[in-house]
Image (cartoon, rainbow, N blue to C red; front, side):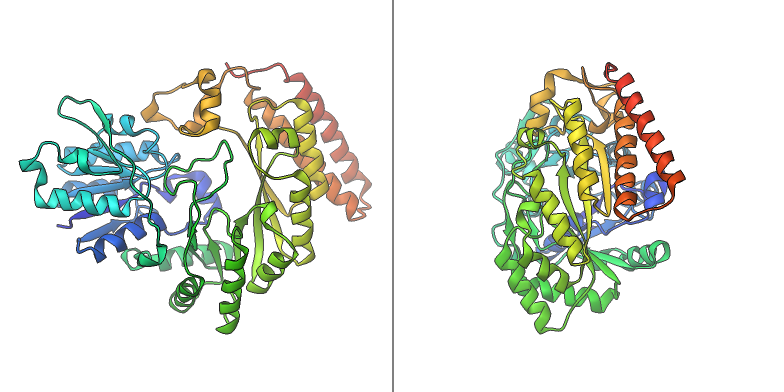
Length: 469
């Protein structure tokens, strides 16, 4: 019986959208917890749900000797996490929940069955909590729970208690690498290779993001930027290449190019060891320049994702993005010049968005022409300034334990149909811009696109007064 069983409730084969994408990555968060706690002397197992099923997990919980179950939960796995908690509690497990979402909904997770909610980074908090549970501190001191920083719980009278937060790990190099050997990482690589002809693995070089975008959550790593030694990161990269032989890698940092001197040192060490692997990463337009993109190209970067969000500077300023539209356009242009693909994230429906902002976004993307772009209708995540800004307008259509923050409606905002027409208009306008720039001679295709654009604009205007109710 392990001291702790870690799991995460992401079931790839139960999600039709994920099965279309088929780009799973190893859950590094719980693997870092596993390696830290094992080094501290705890017996820790991982039940990786990615390629498993809820029935297999439930069977494991019901038939194994119960101890402590740690569940990683995020915005998309809330419903699964709550069901796992229920089954585990019935089977006699003590349940701890952590991850990006539970810290903002600590009382709700506790009332749904968790004994503890861990906020922020979990390594040191779990080590102290497991030590107390193992040593039986609760048998002699009824107040022991109040002494563990970083946890929330319900006291004997079922009142919600939130302990002070715990200091973040200052020296990331003091942490062991994630316990990839605790799961079947090769299956992730093989799944990628089967569906995309390229096997991929992921790693991180830093924790935290220092920027203040109002819609972005900082629940786990905080509004900081703590970076590992570039030499030690290269050690891990070299090991990953030797161990799993991937074709590409994903650098899972929030913003890979924040620290330019770090990138220079990392590139120097990769060059010294004659290492190069195609990779993709996320950056910000204001942290990209000619030198950085030269180094990224040298290192093998084939795609860089940029959070554009909008083509309206007014809206970007209201988001506290700290980026100019022209910087995004320039970053894509510089990337293209080095044969680095650009990916762009865009957001409809942010508070205060008007028709002119939508038109500005369409012009922006049509001019920039990123290789790929994704759109979403903005959703307020609890604990963020954006959530606080629109809190009085929020409508929860379904019970909290049967929904996610993505399903919350904002009173007075345009309807989903309106944004669907905006999306169609954006994609048709960008396609027309690409055809025109490439000197396309197919008049029938161009005429069809123009007809589609006219129809989408008419539909957008016709639904302009439709609002979420």
